[in-house]
Image (cartoon, rainbow, N blue to C red):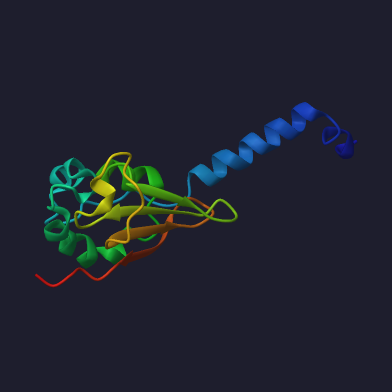
Length: 137
């Protein structure tokens, strides 16, 4: 009798929906990052205005608070990533440029300039936060 439940395609959809709802609850909301001027960070798309390098220290100081935050919460604070890299098993990396470079040209080509990289695991939560070294002034 119980096996007849799993023979119905509708049952599979209900079971899948329940699984997705359970996963949606994973992670936590991103807390405020003390000292971060989030509006200025978001306004400096591709770091073409040259402000992001100066805005980076509060993010790195609060790195431990970012772990387990959801992708939507990171996007709400830091804005859409300048580049998004999709990895195996639904993992992804958001890249935010830190200094002006070739990415400021038409069509925003990929550049080798320093970036802040935020890695998300299969559950859509932050697993790693890395920053490339900034050039000396």
